[in-house]
Image (tube, rainbow, N blue to C red):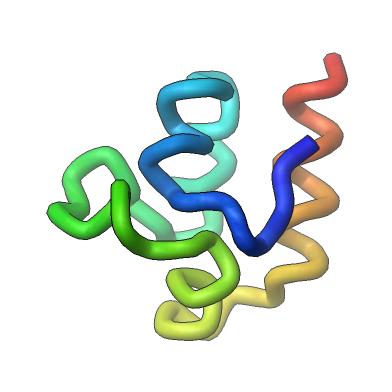
Length: 64
């Protein structure tokens, strides 16, 4: 399960199927230099992304 406290880089490595979801929400995380340091919740806040909707979609896609 993905949580808002997980680092973006960790999410991308553990769940590669999450990358298109992140991009769809405006988080181009693989190109970001701080992906290994930034928590998902912080990144979502910076990009004005609804963290609850993002988490719902991410966890749905990794459960498939």
